[in-house]
Image (cartoon, rainbow, N blue to C red):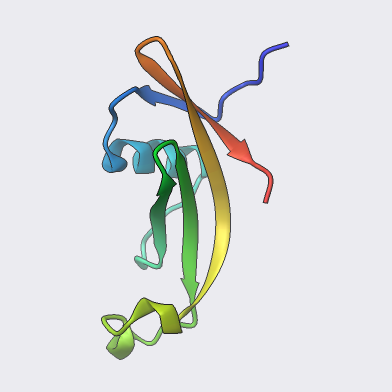
Length: 89
């Protein structure tokens, strides 16, 4: 039995395309700009959200801001597509 992917992109999709597909899958609306995507490897991404961020300190070192992991995904290349599966967090 094959695992159903959360979403599918082209093999060489850029971060923007992956981001759009991931937030569509999760049903997230990033109105306040606190939700971000981070590549943790060639075929791995994490979506996280800043918590309790003061507007005047957003440009300071982000290591000092608390974050919450929303989801992690791992992509697997199959032909000319990459299937992204949500990892349990």
